[in-house]
Image 1 (cartoon, one colour):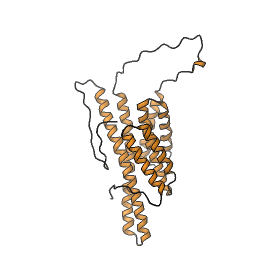
Image 2 (image 1 turned 120 degrees about the vertical axis):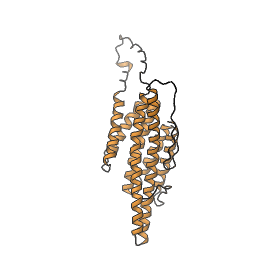
Image 3 (image 1 turned 45 degrees about the horizontal axis):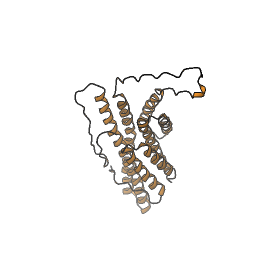
Image 4 (image 1 turned 60 degrees about the vertical axis):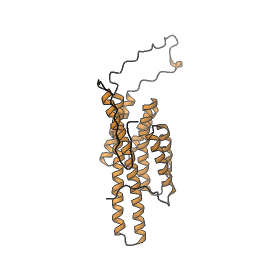
Length: 260
């Protein structure tokens, strides 16, 4: 089986190189908690991916970017509490789930994450009616005291579960890329002419690109999810000493510590 290597975009397809560069830029923004910037970069990468010539590869990359965008919107909601991010994440996850090429594990992961997003949407407070729709004789609503959160770690636990669920799709994509790369090695060895070997090399490069993208996405979200779950669990129970987890696993060159 081949191993992930530095991705090399197909020279004949500039759209593939553009999408890859924008994806990597968005990934860096995601890792530094610039989720609004990551949304913009992933969106631009999606636009570039739509111009990729290879139809099958274009569909896989576009679906992966949809999943990335959903994750960035969820993280942006955690920062600014804007419900529009949950709505957009729900739309993206529904579109991702409609892909026929998803395997059972990917479909189940997307369905589970979509259910959690819909639960968060259902828990949102009803918006205040505009002033014109209120009875002028009706006194303004009294300010309600803010209830003390009896479970301060609940939000972190939910966020950690969401991030961990997202990581499964990334790791699945990495596995798919490795399988494609391994098959490309067999095709190269079996080819009896230059054209066959060139096609096998191109397929291997694409497999490596998918493996690296999936490894980075899955590893980042897995680290963030585990960290958030650990912090949320410690905050959810009384403790004498505050402990901050520090994780530094290595996955396709990824080294992170702490949580987003």
